[in-house]
Length: 200
Ligand SMILES: [Zn+2]
Image 1 (cartoon, rainbow, N blue to C red):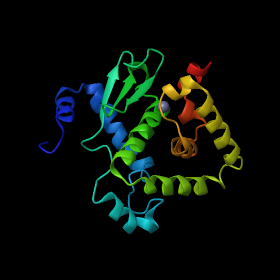
Image 2: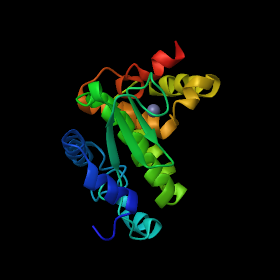
Image 3: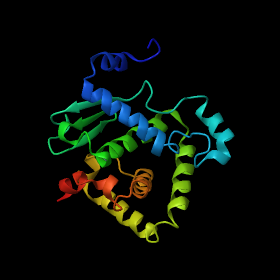
Image 4: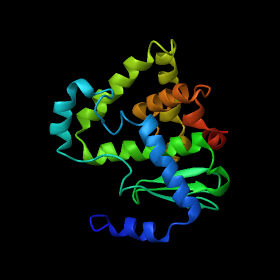
């Protein structure tokens, strides 16, 4: 534990049983769904992995020693959220009644991994990953381009949507990838009712 940050150590020592199980669940999701965002061998950017390694400079990506996840009665940033990722604090809050909601947890995890890529890795890696995801999804979602443009229009013009977190192109593509891999209707992981309810 010595190498971990103080906030992480404090979280680790005080985590509840629910938070412990939720954290374990996140490890499983990382293994199952986020190989591309943690730049694992054999993932989407595998054929440029040497370049990736140069850019990441040996940094390890992933939730180990980094992600604190809290079960709360309501999110600090707003009562209407089911979950929330706090960029400054590097922590996820999940409202108690949603601790078994896979779509809510996956949504917040995308925020976490995207933020980790922003902080630790050269921006070109995120750009490459975005293109690879687009190419991967294109054959699976025939109207992908239209969906993306619609999403970005929404993203640009609705102030409240923006204040609910960053849901840019990489976020949106990854959310669609997870919808497909989990068998959810497209749009579930991105919206999961939360952002929608804010807009409406
Ligand atoms: Zn969000």
